[in-house]
Length: 135
Image 1 (tube, rainbow, N blue to C red):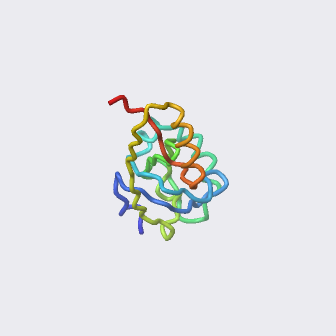
Image 2: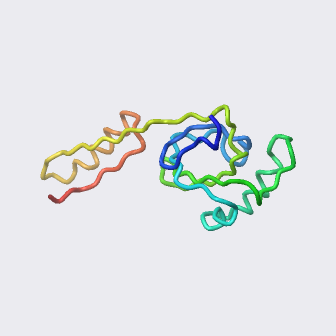
């Protein structure tokens, strides 16, 4: 898949071309925006990241960060990650279908929230939230 075929709102997993500075792999990240360098600067100190990443990219045609398209992802932990399109390995891009479930536990005992957290973690599920519903 090509970066140009990625759709805002969808989730993706992919390898990066600069694992030292960007991590080797981004997993289940939702694409929330795309824009130019000025837009990227409103989200993160992109110039500092460019200074680190560009020298570590594989050799190729002249690279101009000012003409790059920047993609903004929300990672599973809620953090924002901004990447230049050429920083992503195109052959590794996989669209991921994520499904959310809503579970309601009707009880009056508030200590169950800790037990629910423990059960989810024991099941290997780390991307979840438990909230109290006062209805």
